[in-house]
Image 1 (cartoon, rainbow, N blue to C red):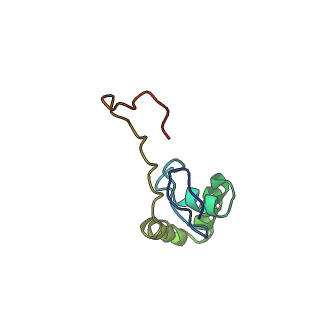
Image 2: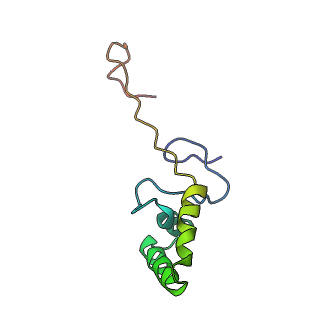
Amino acid sequence: MNQLSHGGPEAPYKQLRRPLDDRLAAGVCGGVGRYFDIDPVLVRVAFALLAVVTLGTALIAYPIMWFLMPEEPAPAPPVWRDPSDPTWGRPAA
């Protein structure tokens, strides 16, 4: 099984998640953009146009998606070694 950059196992399929670093409000459009491999700005513009065309009815979808889409897991914190450890200063294995 493949490993992600934060050390966890990689899912065998794409996951629709709200990113922690690419968000304006809640990250819904950023997550949809990453899922479909397109620029999140295009998703935001398309969502705004859809909201205008539907006279605001599409705005109901955003809070629903915010509630249903899970956030990306936070990256694992770096491992800090104790200076009193006799192996401190040596490269980690």
